[in-house]
Image (cartoon, rainbow, N blue to C red; front, side, top):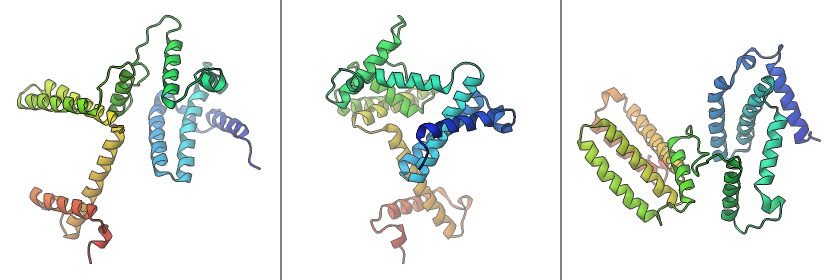
Length: 274
C-alpha cells in the first residue's frame, strides 16, 4: 500500500532539508530566493504546458517540480527563522476555510459567480481590516505576462460595474484606437507611437474578455500557427536545395501561401502529395 500524502509530504520536506544541509548538494545549498525566481516561473509555465497536453506522466512530473519550488522557498524561510512549512500550510488552510463560508459555515450561494463575488468581498475585508486602503485592482502582479495582466485588471475593474455593456462597444473602442495609432504612426513622436500601440493591445484584450476568450491563449495559438506555417515553409525551401539567404522575399511569400494552403487542406499535409 502506498504511503499517505501526509507521510510522503513529510519525506519531501526531509529531502529538501538534507539537500540544503552541510552534507547536501552544493548547488542546492548556494541557492537564494533571488536565484530561484527564474525556476519558479519556468516550472509554472512547464506545468501549464503539461496541463494543456493532458498527459498523465507529464502532469505528474511538472506539477511535482512546481511543488518542489514552493518547498524550496519554505526551507529557505525556515533557515532564516521567518516561517516553516507548517506556518504556510496553517495560513493556507485557514484562508480557504474562511473564504468558503458556504461550505464550512452557514452562508448560502447559488452559483459559481456568487461564490466568486463572496471570495472577493471577504478578501477585501481582510485586507482593509487594519484600516489600510486597498484598491479593487490590487492583487494582480506586475510580473504577469502583459496580456494576462491586462485581462485580470479589466476583470477586476468590471466587477465594480465599470465595463462595456458588451463586446460590440469594446470593438468600437478598438477601431478608435486604430485611428489614433494611424495618426501616431504618421508622426515622429516615438513615445506617442509606443503609447498608442499599448492602448490598442489593451483594447483588443477587452474584446477577447467580453467574448469569453483568454487573450493570452488566443495569442499563444496564433504564435503556434505561425510557427507551424513557418516550419512548413522552411522545409519547402530546403527541399528545393535553397537557404533563406538564397530566397527572395517574393519567393518566401509564395512558399508561405503554399504552407497556409497545405495546413488548411482537409486531406492533411501528408496526403497532399503523391
